Image 1 (cartoon, rainbow, N blue to C red):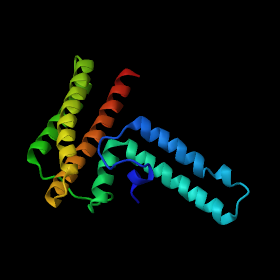
Image 2 (spheres, one colour; image 1 turned 135 degrees about the vertical axis):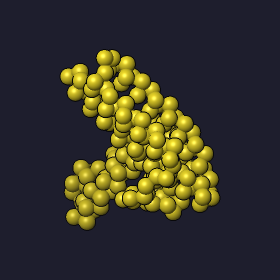
Image 3 (cartoon, rainbow, N blue to C red; image 1 turned 30 degrees about the vertical axis):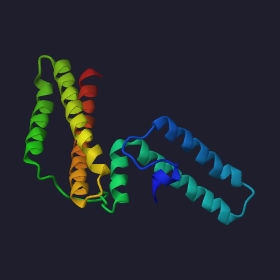
Image 4 (tube, helix red, strand yellow; image 1 turned 60 degrees about the horizontal axis):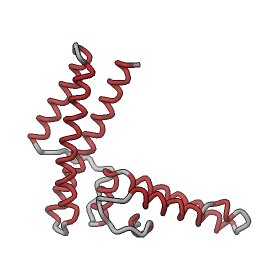
Length: 174
């Protein structure tokens, strides 16, 4: 299912999230199970299924990483449930540096500064990857789709690492 079509949006990495939320509310009002309380069992089931589809679509399109994966899926490249590893040695080295920095926070004299520096580093790197990803997602070339998949894998890794940093930060300051 093309979630962009469901929400009457052009397929794009950049999405107007306010418009997306408006369309989500409109769609939910139209198919909400309460509207089908007196309908047949089949119509009730269809309403519940449609509501679930709309919820899934909304969650996918509002999340930049999931949205990028969906764009690739529409082009024929599925990333969900895959186990492909990155072969970008420069990124792997960067991962190791981030992991070491994350581990060093516990022993730091200025953990707040180290945490802020890591957040900044993640943000800068993510902006660079996202800029490249946007260009690759526009392309119709399979080679660009494969490169876009690698960029998405990087963003996924960075999101996990950022979650770890948030947990470290919470543990230090709670």
